[in-house]
Image 1 (cartoon, helix red, strand yellow):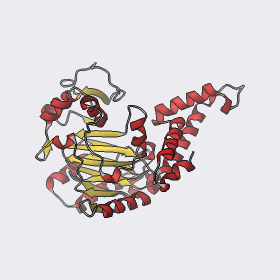
Image 2: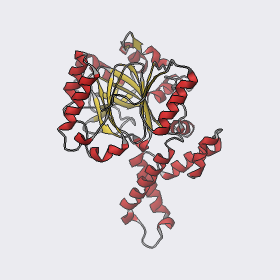
Image 3: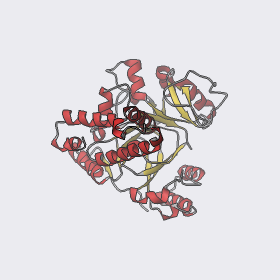
Image 4: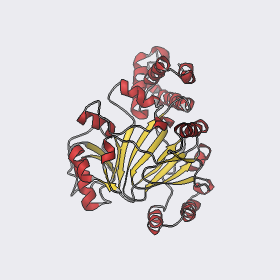
Length: 363
C-alpha cells in the first residue's frame, strides 16, 4: 500500500517543478503539488479557512448549478427553470446557487454535492470575456482539449465542485480517459486511486464499501496515515474483488493540486466542507490513450446502431446512418470522431512545438 508516488513543492524553482511534473505525465503516475495558487476572482471566495458564502451568493447567486443527491424539498422548489448544466434525474437536479448555499447554511449535509458547474464560463458570462474566475496553474496549461473548445464554441471541461463534509464521488475514470487535475480552494479530500493494471478488479464496482463514516471519524480524530490506510485496506478486504487491489491513498489539503493520470480509477471523499476546481484535459503525453478510447467508442456505437443501416448501401456510403452514429457518439461520449479530427487538425496547424506533432500522426 502506498501513500503517495510523487509529491513536490511548487515553491521550488519554477523550471524544476515543471520538469518534475512532466515526468509524472510521461510515466502516467499521480502526484500532489503543494502551495498552488490560482488568483482571479476565486481568490476572494475564501475568508480565513472557510468559504465567503455571502460574497459568492452576492455575485453568482442567480447561476443555475447541478446538484447530486436527494432534493431537499424545503430548500429546493421543484420545477425550477431548466438548465443545460445537467439533465435532471432522480439523484441529480438543477438549482440556483443561492438556494444551494441557503440549504448549505440550514441543512448541511442535506444540501447535496454541487458538481460539474462550468464556473469559469459563467464568470465570463457575468463579468465579461476578459475577466477570469481563476488562472490555470502553469503545470496544467498544455491543455489541448480546453484550448480547442475555447476557440470553437461555448463549452469547456473546467468545473467547480462544492460539497459538505461526507459528500463523495464513487469509483470512476475520467471522461475520454483524459488527465484531470483538482485544486482544493478550501477543505480536505481523501483520494483512493487505482492504476490501470488493476482495472480488472474494480470493473463494475461503484465504490469501496463502508468507508463513509470511518474516514470522517479518522479525520476528526486527527489520526495518522497508517490508520487511514488500514481503514481502506480493511474495507477493501471484505469485497470479493477489491481485496486484490493495491491503491494509492492521498489526503489533499487546501492549496494542494492533485494530478490524476489517464485511466486511473479513483474514489474521492470530502473529509470536511470543500470547494475545488477541476479540469479534464489531454496533450501529447496521453494523446494515444485518448485516441484509442475514442476509436473504441466509435466502433461500439456503429455496432450498436448496425440495424439502422440502409441494407442497400455500404457502411461508408450510408451518410444518413453515419450522421446518426456521430450524433449518438456525441451524446454518449461527449465528442464524436468528426470533432476529434477537427481538434487534431487545429493542434497540428497551430503547434509551435515539434513534440506536439503527435497530433499530425493521428490525422
